[in-house]
Amino acid sequence: MAVEFKAGLKDVVAVNSSITAVDGDQGLLSYRGYDIRDLATQATYEEVVYLLWYGELPTQPQLREISRELAAARPLPQPVLASMRTYPKRAHPLEALRTAVSIVGMHDPDAASNKREATLRKATRLTAQIPVMVGAWQRLREGQEPVAPLVDGSAAENFLYTVTGRRSTPVAARTMDMIFILHADHEINASTFAMRVAVATFTDLHSAITAAIGTLKGPRHGGANEDVLEMLLEIGDPSRAARYIEERWEARSRMTKEERAKPENRIPGWGHPVYKVDDPRAGVLREMARKLVSETGNTKVFDIAVRVFETMHRVSDLPVNVDFFSAVVYHALGIPIDLCTSIFAAARISGWSAHAMEQYNDKLLRPRAHYTGPPPRQFVPVSQRS
Image 1: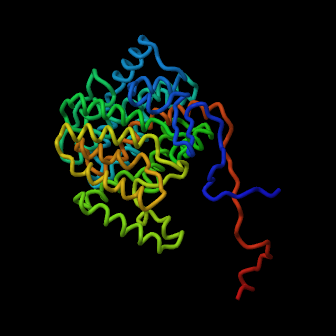
Image 2 (image 1 turned 30 degrees about the horizontal axis):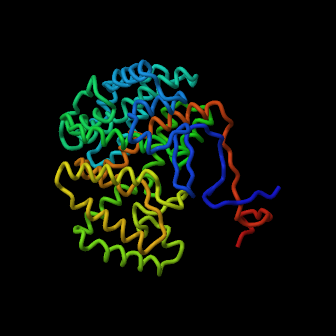
Image 3 (image 1 turned 90 degrees about the horizontal axis):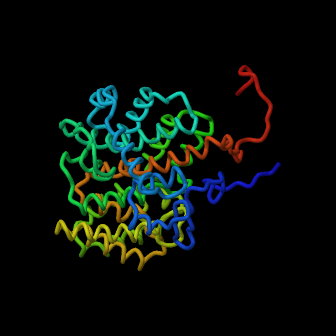
């Protein structure tokens, strides 16, 4: 039977899902029917976690309970911290996180069960502990001792605390909370699809999340915000932004389609496989970045980003994506460049977990390949081959 081939599975509908809707033509994103702009500006990350897992926004008692459960689950098992101390200091934060998640899975009391209640308990622990792992690795690789996570406060505030060792300002804490909301889920992106493929085999949640983190590490998926920040720092001054972008865009116009597809030849933070117009998260992030740099007084990188944004819209028809202004926010918060994608994972674990719970009730994911090899031919014994 002939099967239509679509490169990269572009626009192929692989699963039914009630979690997230993306309208790439209109630039719309919603979680369980709620617009992302409303959630980012009016809800907390803990509310969004509850929404993703249970399908409805929580009541006050439900919010207090899930916040309490997440805070109580933050401390890392000592064997996990002990293993992290053995990682080479040059390891990328996502490599450290991928390994730590695999190890914490071996110590999880629900490791062998994929029942919904057990998966919810594992999801709670992972959603609480992954931000702590990211913060612990940042301190360990700098020769500092990890700090014990906060027993109170939001997930976002706790994340900043485990990275820096000090309480954040209210603006910084709220900014990170919004970052977590904006990155909590995004339909069937590469890491979520990899995770769902793993879960569809009925593997355990930790193994599936390890697959997701490994996928996120690829520069075609999660590494773009690191590239954005490197580009902005390379530009160095707002007055150089327009010419820099014009020259890169002109160079791209002379490349083949294959050359343009290479990560090093892209304009980081621009273009998206689904959105045909600007990513709806980008506008929220731009305003967040503006408020944050106004508080710190260090506006140079934000000003460069605005010039790049204006120039790209003038010379190209590519939409801006979530990575562009998120990189500016991370820089304003003093977060190292190579930690940016780990923040993505620290937020996305809630969405990955929601998809895992949904996929456990679905079928095995087994796509087909479009064969491009030789036609049928006769086997020749080695003694007769010339």
